Amino acid sequence: MTESPLPPFFRIGPERPASPVILSVPHAGRDYGPYLLNATRLRKDVLETLEDRLVDRLIWRATALGMTAFVARAPRLEIDLNREEREIDPSLIAPPLAAGGLVQSARTRGGLGLIPSRITGSGPIWRERIPRAELERRIATIHQPYHAALSDALATARQRFGDAVLLDCHSMPPRHRPDNDGARPATIVFGDRHGTTIDGDLLDAAMTASRAMGYRTACNAPYAGGYIVARHGKPAAGVHALQLEIDRSAYLDADLKTPGPGFEGMARLIAGVAKAIEQRLLSGQQALAAE
Image (cartoon, rainbow, N blue to C red):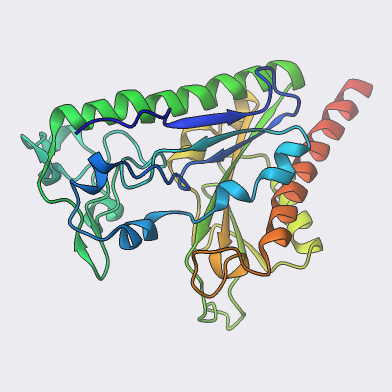
């Protein structure tokens, strides 16, 4: 395979963050180069179902407020930035990897590991197994630089503001069935790995802001946060991370491909949540300084 001529992700905002809140958009990349499409056995429109469709276009209000953002160009098809480097289906790689050094999970068994291997209802993605050298290239040129960039930005923001927060932005398939308690499913789901990746007061700021804007909001169910927030969220060290999942039917049209009536409202939601977290964090810092 030949890599794309475009950088695998881009940064919005100054090198020195103007806000303690950093945004991540890892699953909205759409750079489907010929080298990728020719290696797959599925139509492009099927491959696009792996995306968090157009989430990269929902963050503009937040970045206009001064938040730094990192946005993937490389599609999730190529490599999933929300997976650990070792979360790989060993049978997908040639020659096969030693299973002992890998992380096997429900996601890898379901075809959604570091390199997605199949799509439900459509079958296997790749015509042939991925050469080991190609796997190593994707890790070294896409996955590792993305996480290094997040780490550097969070460290710089923490140094400037005392704490830093990563808001990891995703979208989820429409949820039409009621939850176990009979309530309508939430439109917005925050994930903090069950209380481990962000201070509770900052989580409260995010959830309060979402509910104040009229969105049904939940935490950790059905999504508790993935590898990105687990890797970067270290509240004891002053670096917090929160996953944000948005129901696609709340901002896309009925085709789940193009902007719908709720698109602008969801851009306001992301900006509102980011601003609420920023204000809560900075007000807490000021209170500590006054003691």
